[in-house]
Length: 72
Image (tube, rainbow, N blue to C red; front, side, top):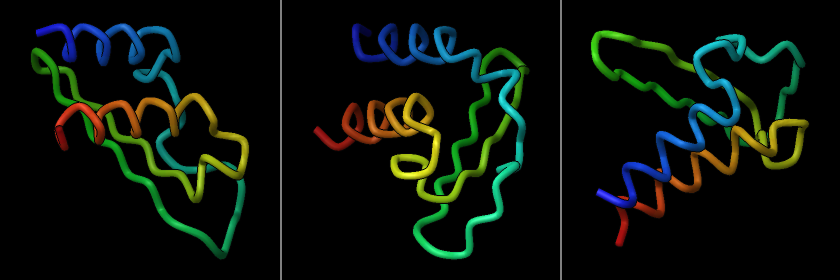
């Protein structure tokens, strides 16, 4: 339960629900990071190219937090 609370806290902190769905920057190399979240009938997805490199540090931190929480 603690992992889930940390994820929800980070979702709220970065205002995930209001991040633009598609990356406003056109980047033609790197990795595409897609995160979809559905909580209580509320759905949103965000797609970014290499957010850890191109101006998406907080989004990358959220994705990494989720990945690490479920890979343990």
